[in-house]
Image (cartoon, rainbow, N blue to C red; front, top):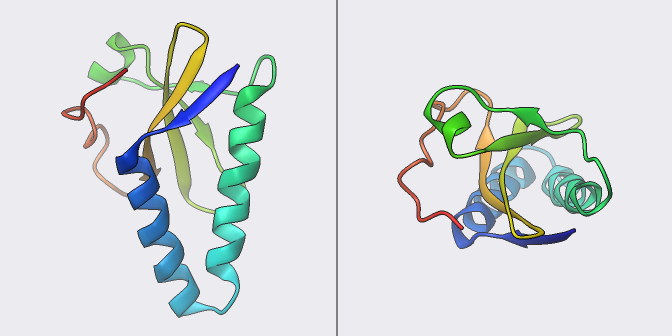
Length: 103
């Protein structure tokens, strides 16, 4: 399966990694590595995606929960492509990304 990352998700990852790097040297790099590992997992058959509830469920959104970090990759599958539409922190308002243009 092909995996695409939206501009917004890339920005969210970059900002989170910068914050973690300021907190503890090397932790931002670990976050980026964890994200990259997750994108590989998404490209494999049957990734461990969790359904999203509410309005997002109607869009077919699912999420992949990162290990070690309180983030999920919010994804939408369309035509053999999984698009990461948000890099969402678990304590952020759910569905904040719904107004983004989706694949």
